[in-house]
Image (cartoon, rainbow, N blue to C red; front, side):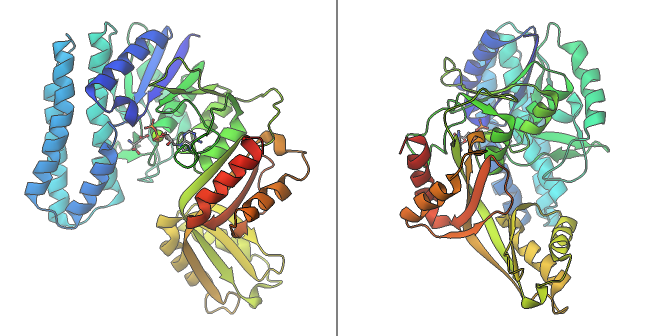
Length: 463
Ligand code: ADP
Ligand code: ASP
Ligand code: MG
């Protein structure tokens, strides 16, 4: 292997010891040309988000200062340890970043308003504070290293703050210009999650987006492999916090991994697979705390596997919208108007289904988008005698059953719904025309864990 992109998640870099352990892993596994992508230290992005909101709602300067002080202690203690080990001193860099953060928070408190753009700016500090630490830790272990923000490294996105999309051609050009000359003899450390738009304003790729950053860099650099280092042994048969005996999956196809990530397997950001798949670059998911485990390999072609269902994912924080009215019967274009109305608000539709009676259409969206979605749909339809009601239910979850072996195997859906019914779980909606490697449906949040366990027993634990 000549060129490798490795991404380390928040838990992998949560403390001085962990950052030093990561430096050891980079030393052990690096290829002749290696790029490291890093997230914020665990919990930092959550705290920045919470503080940004509190500030816009009137938190005073004292609480801003004490928040910044907390971040200062956490990051400076790591920086000091690296200096002890002979690494470069990044304490001034950290101080400068914290000064900048304090100023922007005070600014937000004066304006009393938090725009998506200023939120992205605040969130960027998690990764910006962490990257210099890891870069210095690599140097302390004898690997020359420089750090870059995603934008400095060349990742350019549109200006959709909060969930920006990369402009791939421009990104390819810039990343290659910046990073290729530096790959020999040095290991660039790039902040995950954050990038910049064409005007150079900081954007973020969406929560959990460091995985996506690694995949973007891997694709534009034509890397041989992309490795995602996390705190689990790989992609597991289901969320380990729901089912104790979830097992590691050795190999997954891009499509299977994409479906799992899309429907809630948090270990991979849903967009991670796409750039890798386009270039046919293998993605590996491995455990920082158990590096001897091979983890999960995600590739395009897959040898036949015995299992019909490989994994079950649960996606929470979604809402089910119901659009109904007898006036919809026989009226063409209702579904397309639903899509358009939601697309105009930049609302992502996760699932859609239309009853055969045509008198109702259900869509699932992220919970945070639900109210705006209802408003947009009411505005689009009400008063025209087509749609009578637009209602929504917030406390729901999507369960997805994923496996390429379902293709062409009869009776899988029957087994899925029998297992779910035997667990006494009511199915609220089933997706129409879901891909052949995935059966997904909606249940009430309270039933999600029970449904996932029942399916895990039925398909994975050889029930
Ligand atoms: P990182 O900080 O490394 O990006 P994340 O917290 O984003 O890590 O993702 C890893 C977590 O994803 C795991 O600790 C696990 O709780 C959760 N998870 C959910 N579903 C799965 C799954 N199918 N396989 C592995 N982990 C999963
Ligand atoms: N630090 C960011 C987040 O918590 C990005 C990531 O961890 O991938 O969302
Ligand atoms: Mg993550």
